[in-house]
Amino acid sequence: METPLTASAQKIDKLHDRLMIAAQKSGIPDAVFQKALEYPGTELEDKIAAFMIEFSKKASGIVTPIAAKDTGLIPQGWKVKKGGDRLEGDVDLAKLDYSSCPVRDDEEYVSGETMMKRAKEVNAIGSVGLAADLLKAQDEGKEIFPVESRGVHYFIMPLTELQDDDGDDGSGNVAYFNWNGKRWKLNFNWLDNNFNRNDRFLRRRYYLLAPTSVGASFMNCCFCHPPSIFPTSTSGEEIAMYLLLSMAFSSQASCRKNFRVSSLMLAF
Image (cartoon, rainbow, N blue to C red; front, side, top):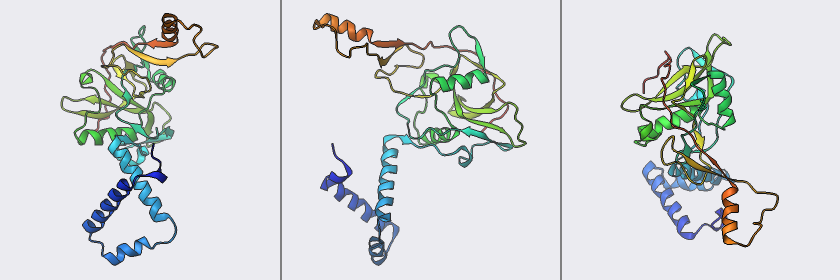
């Protein structure tokens, strides 16, 4: 495995070529280019390394959500509630789970308070900053949610909570995505509304076998060791049974219900 100190000469040559192309494209005179190379310290190298990391993330589909206030998505007359914008850090858009529902099998709906509590319990992600990244990906022609969820599911962004500019400590507001017939649209819903079985959370996908479709049964590979980490038998049949019983299975039912739409709309 290569490290930054053992990067191949071929990669270094490619980086050199890209830097030369950038310099020529920008029209920087040779003297200016040379002067930049003579800049003391390691700031130039640090910035080059930072750009390499940034573009590596872009090429890999990894985004780093920014603060909600910097996205331009907050509706007029609203602001982020104090302490109400929790950023996820790096998110790999290719490794998301869309199956988690805030409503359990024996429930028709839950309150906004319960929805927010369960979002924490399942480690849901979804800030307005992530919503901005998803909208950008959609503008680039990428599918941001499963095709089979169109017109069926609403994807909640529970990590950012808004309130009106008057500072009213009443019901907050969270963003969600819904399919408008042509594309996924960002909207906002009051937390004093009920949340139903067609609502979904986004989560990072850690399990080994991903669900083939939203709501499908899947195997969540959480391996649990008994007191001894070694199989208690050398028999192949017994070892197989040991491994089978050391895995936790879970499933998520596919469900649909009506959704109460907020009066706050954003057009995208």
